[in-house]
Length: 290
Ligand SMILES: *Cc1c(COP(=O)(O)O)cnc(C)c1O
Image (cartoon, rainbow, N blue to C red; front, side, top):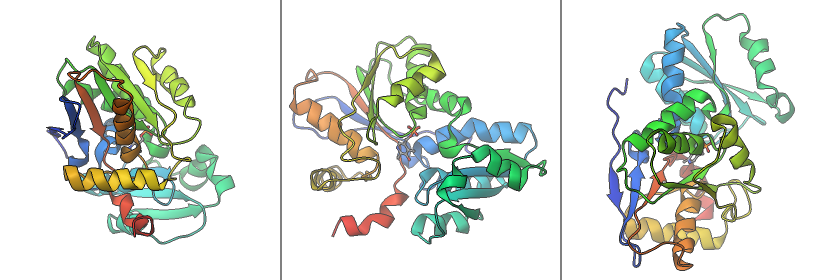
């Protein structure tokens, strides 16, 4: 399906940092985007190995993971179904999911909490159905994300990523350790109370060495923004010519900018920000920009 994916690494303009780079995983594919492809890759091979023809997964109404699963399924010739959290809605993301052939089942927030029961109830006797957790969270996802490190130079001082569940971060840290690199992984949670991310990473890896968690860049919480973040984002996009989104990647880039203002980095240090993609979601956010 994607035999040789390769995403470029590109230098960013910056007044003080001479070695600021961005790994363009957003360019992997517009829909099977960024870290969501990295997370799905080995889940799809597992489904294939088990002869499963039908991917069943879970997400919110603006989930990048749902769109990635829908697009990846159709390209792999598989069926897909998603349990969508909350009341029935129509939006740009779900429209794309449906165009890629995904069946949507809306479930109330209470029932949504018990994903295993939902799967059992609807697909318990479908031998073709393959369970994929919300956001693709799994050890397979960690393995897929670790591969990002293999595509980067080995002398990077700081790698930055945004986090929701911390699975991508766990993969990056695994990659750093597997190669024995000295790189520090900086994780910027997109939600409030992001300290749990360290626990998530610990669950996967059994350690959190070389991890630095920056929990103060959530701007009010998940999918919340402030004028300061929106201004930063508009300025970043127009000056760099690279789209970022307010939910994840703008918060990460803002963190780098803020830390550099506080002289956190040495001028020559090599910094790589991971663009985790997920840009389709901004289509539903036009009210925030005008
Ligand atoms: C889902 C997502 C993340 C968060 O990934 P986790 O593995 O859940 O931490 C970051 N950036 C983008 C663009 C995403 O879509």
